[in-house]
Image (tube, rainbow, N blue to C red; front, side, top):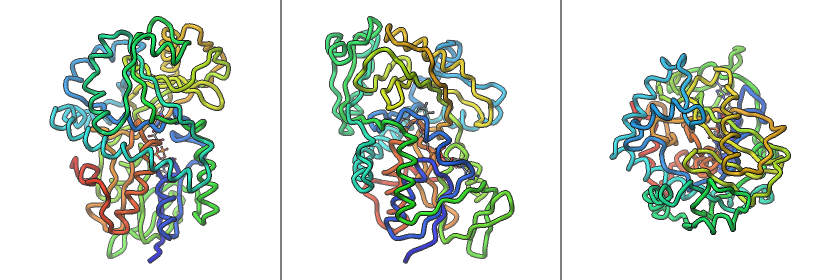
Length: 414
Ligand SMILES: Cc1cc2nc3c(=O)[nH]c(=O)nc-3n(C[C@H](O)[C@H](O)[C@H](O)COP(=O)(O)OP(=O)(O)OC[C@H]3O[C@@H](n4cnc5c(N)ncnc54)[C@H](O)[C@@H]3O)c2cc1C
């Protein structure tokens, strides 16, 4: 039976859900407090990057954290004044570094992300948006043969989950990307890593398609829920207006924990803030995304220029951006790509919605039969958006998905 479904969040995960739920015949309304062309889903690197599925918390990571935090060009920073808010998440993050938890995270992420690419192709086929995707693969580079060899275990995990990973020496990477300088000495090529030419364009085009199919979009800041005798029945906006639903899906990115708490299911999620600079005149030619594995950043050719991005800054989403992170990434990029022109770039910051173990929540509520959660995709929200929407569709229809859904449950950490 068609139901009235409200999706909170017009980011790429909300749109992935809208696509699948509308296709199942439901009456779908997407609500958000900000316009579609703002926010984290609009400015990322555009990668359908399933091969990057390894969780961030890993055994022994805590030993390297002090050095990472002290390195001004390093990939990790914490806004110390937000430490009180971050503490519960950091505690769970440290627990997720235990070897057994890491192994579980690898399986959960590998199983999910190995389905992600096909889900994008299926969406692009159905919507007529295939021209937005470039399928040119990714080149991971390392500073030495030794450091590349030291990462062998991570490449074995990727291969085990079906990703073709081709080991290359200095000549191989140079052949593929002649702009690389002496800093890059070895690497891996992964053909099944694709890129949208502009994630904002994808969002706008996909939303236009959804509107044509009957999905409605409404502006509003969800401040609470009206609860009937059998559970939640409407979202309540901060101006007092309400919107009734049969079912609701929370796809509110880094803010999802605030909404799940209003529904009696608190969940620890933080804004893992990333930065990038888009260079309109890069002055070099690269053929694909290059991932600088030891320095945790990427450069991606996009329709509006080359985007240099990365960094993990743990902070409240409301804390003002620190664009010194962008400068640090450009300094690193020049080391690998000596001829890169870093002048005239535009800077951006986005809030990745990150769970302590890097595994997203894709779940029916443990408390309310008509509430669903789809959030916390961290560094891989674009990648995981379409497969996650499909899985929520299965859960809503009472179908058994083709992967075990237990690792993505909302009540796992409580
Ligand atoms: C530098 C950087 C590079 C990245 N590169 C990639 C990449 O190459 N590939 C990839 O897969 N991922 C990448 N990501 C991650 C990706 O951008 C995110 O995981 C993804 O955008 C999250 O989408 P979302 O829909 O879950 O959240 P969002 O896009 O944040 O959307 C959530 C929406 O919920 C709304 N909302 C929240 N609370 C409320 C409320 N109370 N009422 C109304 N609306 C509300 C917000 O306004 C927001 O619009 C990158 C991220 C960064 C920062």
